[in-house]
Image 1 (cartoon, rainbow, N blue to C red):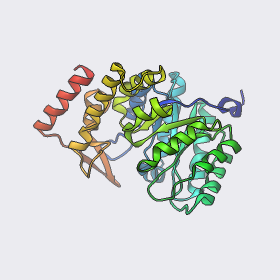
Image 2: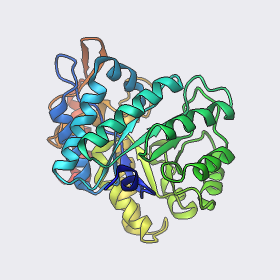
Image 3: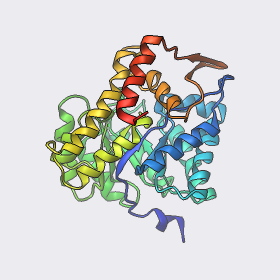
Length: 327
């Protein structure tokens, strides 16, 4: 089968968690643990597995670990028959760098036969819709893989809804997938416009899933993209109920979503920077799940920092883990 036909009009929906990048004591990518984490997330029944996170891409690319990690994920997804689609973040400061990354992901998909996709926010140097249109045209022409456009990066202007729809119509085989993450209340209105247009195949909720219940049941988003991979089983339960037509009054939906927020809240209480910490305490949860072997984060070349857990913190983590995971 030709690769182009394999990826034509791909169905992308459901939870697409971003993996937390595991590090060794030598500040190197821990590939075996990354693969183990991907198995856990896939086994939960998610639609996709995303790696790495946008803030890590430049560093990982510079060290050669970007391709090393993606190739390991692609290879295991094929050998073990993953149902989740391996999705690579190919964000960059400029179009040339993003295209280079897209082409390398495309090559990995061709070499391994893995079902893959790309997630790309606007380039940091974009000034207007015209810049972003050129950017996504070049990305779409560089690969046959489906590309999820993330609408907001805090640096570039927002791509207009009209631009997203126009690109989806021009490149129906690999565009038309949007992670709508606009700031403030405009996000819901933009989602409604996107969902209403037949050229848009999938709109994903963002912002850690904090608007997901309303957006999935009342607007019609078809999935969520959020880092927190430890809670993939909860994401899947939420998605299954929403897909079945449940609304915010559904007890099973309430139970799963409440438990997710209960665990995500640890990143607010014990954040190492401001709030909404996506590593820190969640590394402890991954460790307790038997996936991670440490709680290290890379802080620079050859440097890692441990997330230290006091006895009081441990008691809080363990109490919540027992409620949610049963051990």
